[in-house]
Length: 220
Image (cartoon, rainbow, N blue to C red; front, side):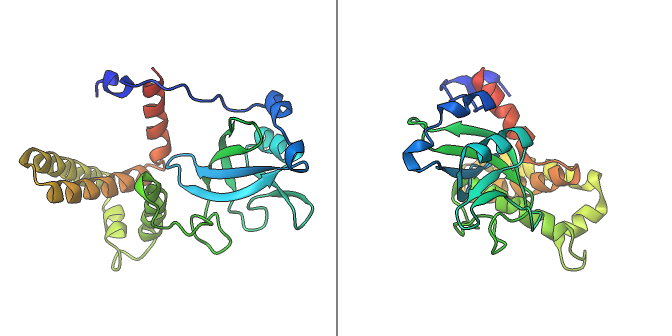
């Protein structure tokens, strides 16, 4: 791919917070707490809203997992400390007034206590946000019985077969694009994304590193 295509428009992104930046955050405005919106680091799906005090933000930045301040328990609360469904930190950004933070993280399991991907019930999140749910679906189906799941049967056949399917779907997507049938193009592209998700999972990875490369190329 020509990197210049990904660098056509340049945007200045806020720098991720470090421990040295904690003093910049205006905790006093809301009684010692700031709202912390959590988004999936890969798909940007909104996962949950929590609150942080100074100690929670410091623990998050230094420990690698997201920590909140629980208003009901009146103490620090590491997300997933009981369930194991932790949020692995990618980065934290401050808003323009520096009185709220955006936490980009990768969930290990469901984020919500109801066992959904998002506390906002967005299993069918719009746009690329659905990719987080798709990854969950692929993982669940891969662990099912091959008799009941196409994904499990494909995984059972091994990497070579999965890679072959990605190649086939890629070719079919290209042919649909050339033919100009948008419905066919959309359907073939959906098949390609699904099989690509299976291939990434089979290699014990996901979209995260792929999107990281795209972000780096975009930065120029």
